[in-house]
Length: 274
Image (cartoon, one colour):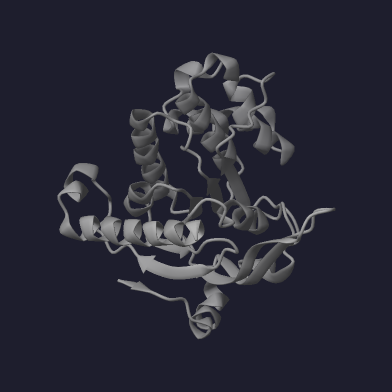
């Protein structure tokens, strides 16, 4: 069932949270134009190992919020804590995976995945072993000597996920990571992401526009309102794990959750047109 976020609930759970978002607001000031209020008073907590999707209409500030959690953008008000410590900038505890693959074109697949561990001071042989383990996990072992230009979109995204996992962040920040993929590849990547999450149980904040994707992947879906973005509802995805797509499609609870969130999305879009 869906329920609104209450400040008191945020305060009670913040102590043990992997990510605690407290009263975040963001206003962009552009010379010669009115200030743009992107986010307003956003508060929620994410428990260690929880998979949370953020969904809402276009322009509601989902990506901006994720960049603030990542430390790439400073909030105008409020604060973000990770494991109880204030976020002051990017850090190795938070691993970004964005729609733009952002791979180094001059490095091979193996070189891209080795990059993080090498930057952390790991020796070459150990970094190679770590990278090869992760390439096996994302089914790309045969492609370690390829360059990004030689890969499909789905393969590039697998490399991007492996590269982020290589330096072992405790939290993954994923901004529409499968948005540019075709429908079949997107389904494959969702299944692979869940397999990785089941293995490692990292905390995940996942931004998406796709309702079925959010319900399939998540423990909880945070619904944001139209701009300025606010948390309108927090919806528990009380479906069994591990998730089996064919079984879920026949599950009445899954169908109810998808319809419920799609209705909220339609309402948010309708408000945005007023």
